Image (tube, rainbow, N blue to C red; front, side, top):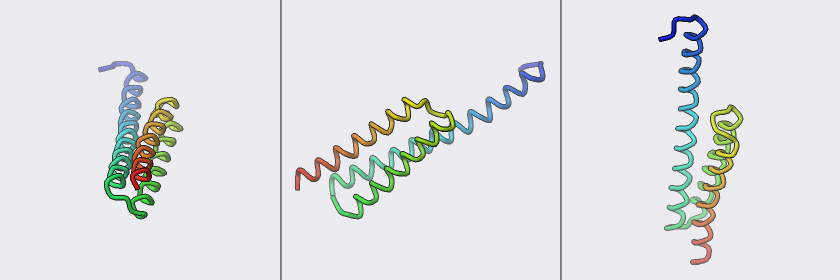
Amino acid sequence: MANIKSAIKRVQITERNRLRNKSYKSAVRTLIKKCVTSAEQYGSNPTPELKEEIHNRLNAAYSKIDKAVKRGVLHPNNGARKKSNLARVVKQQVLAQSSAS
């Protein structure tokens, strides 16, 4: 443990920031998983309600990713990659279903 007052304070600040970052990252992962799950459900059983749900979950995930980037929790490229991968997964499910119809 640090003996210098400023070092002690830095340890406390680092721990506070670590917990804040952890909650953001966890929320981002949860929203991404929910969106992917909705897309898979839509792929197996397409309904207008599920399509609307996918749209809402995608918006929520994008919003949380953008906020995490804005607050410095995620690197901008990391946030862009997460949004790109999520869009690709959703598009594959929606297109696969529309081509099967």
